[in-house]
Length: 404
Ligand code: AMP
Image (tube, rainbow, N blue to C red; front, side, top):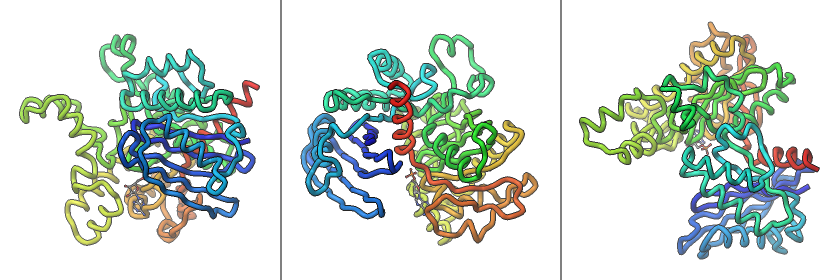
């Protein structure tokens, strides 16, 4: 079975074609700068040994329809293709950012689902509209294939009310759906499943804290295999320090900025979402470079790392208390998978809680799933590479098998 996974942004389409018999991607690609004169398409094939060919082309791709049509041409190309005809694609899985309270799991897309995703645009004004475009375009290009929506918010729909409600006038929740939703659910769910397999623990008895540290960052307390609390909220701004987002701040900060710096809503939005976090300290948000600067003695970079890791450590404590019993901590995404320094700082001096890293294992440069905890650490500390596209492909397969 072949499944095409699509993640559509306002000017981009990320895609992967999966061979579900192998549970792995045959093609990984990206169309960027859609609508611009020089759109870029990068298309890579991957064979069973992990080898393959890459094609990069620059041309004008006017819109998403043209982009997806070109992707299909390449998927069926005699040199860079892996299938003979698009009819070999059984289904298309879409990343959809916001499913609101309506979607607790992935679903086959029909008119009612499309309407609900549209209704959720106020909750994700930057993401749901391009996701909808991707679905409309894929429907025209693959009219016979089921389309499945996999929501970033769905994994967190199991969070109890005491964790998702803000202490605000209750009508704001009832009438305007103001509550914590959480994001990165596809990643937190994927590493939960993989970590359970890695440890040989039944998922429904597995308590863990998943720490997704990419350019965006979030943590989830997972109780009995289900999300119990998560650090992002109504929007992805809440929680951890991120590449360019502040994470948690005093909610009165916007009043201060408006009164004293004469900033308007747009300025404050830009400041908190795009100019803060690691970038706010260092002017850059690439963690590799920040670590290099800190090693070279840059005080601002050291401060950025301290604030970044301290926030994560505080959430580890909070989520440990929320869960009561903890089996594992899982690091994932760009920084979580690749930065021994950040992992070490987050777990430093937590041995009293049963959390102790083996620094030799932590420093090993590896790409696979691994246990980096000391032998006397009561709680396992794991590094599990995330794969959101694979989760979307697996979910798509599960959903269409269920309807057939
Ligand atoms: P993602 O959004 O998951 O692609 O993660 C992007 C972040 O991962 C960027 O801040 C990168 O600098 C960071 N990253 C990637 N490799 C490393 C590494 N070896 N050490 C530290 N940070 C890294």
